[in-house]
Length: 174
Image (cartoon, rainbow, N blue to C red):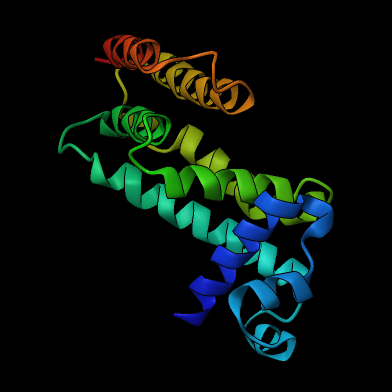
């Protein structure tokens, strides 16, 4: 699909050239389409970045859903499992998409509105079903903190440490 190829190309350009290098011309060239072809699908750079963010949100929602359990309080466990699956390299594409979406939207808070709304939903969804809503929310925030730390310093947390942290967070909410 052309739209996905354009989004993949935008992520690749970001990785190669940084945020200053993310131009519509560079993305079009990387995707092998004309700039007009890119503009047909995404009317502006902001529209392209918004689509990157929306794809990230949908992808993470799908990953969380893949860990669904049919029991009260399932969401926090699924959120932790999804987060650590990305960190363990089971969904490297989603990790790249998160980095790209955050990088691309770093200079314009308006672009982060959908991501902020998703974050709010991820941190509150199903809390009323949790035995201890505050602990559940704390565990979700902790999982996010681990993700952030691992992104900033990939050598900080090896596979064994990540697994130990995952087990500990899951034990907190079991």
